[in-house]
Length: 240
Image 1: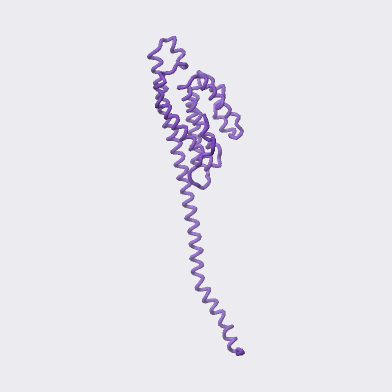
Image 2: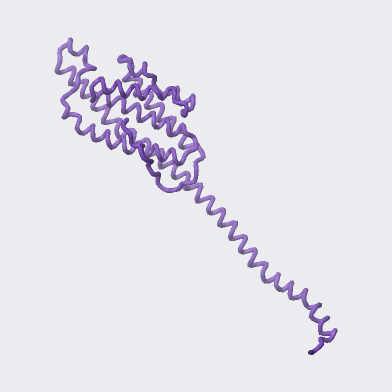
């Protein structure tokens, strides 16, 4: 077996620092580039995530406004048509009972379909708010928007008995513990739903307030990262 001379060993030992430095010099730029690229990648992801959140906020607020007013305007037109029909077709004695009168059912065919479309779109939006927003008031205030328009629709097209059942269900929101106290105050009580003199004006006023407040929350609240389209849970499309 060959025995290495001391001079050979010494020469290699003294040469190691050179090769180490050379290796470090070669790896240094690569490592720096890798870390720099990682930082840049993280920054890009954060910017993209922030942009996606902003786009989600903008999209949701627009859809809330569009969905609400797409049903609100034909509903108000139908209300005005009913009032005109009532005044033009009946005597003064019947006009005093106009809230109990209904135009021929066929006049509401188009509005009924618009209501069904509105209800489905509104429930999808409510689920999206539930999934994306930690502030539950956004979802509940939007739920209130739907309640107000639904109640006004029921007063217009359905018999008083159906409206009364709806009012009893909706009136329970004022004591719903899941809703914050501030939001609960905006929901109508059963007594307010039953006040024939003021209920129509109250429904439209609460509709406007709740829509405004829900959109404000959507635009200002920090939201969870977007995770795709919301999926409706079983039972979400329950009868209003």
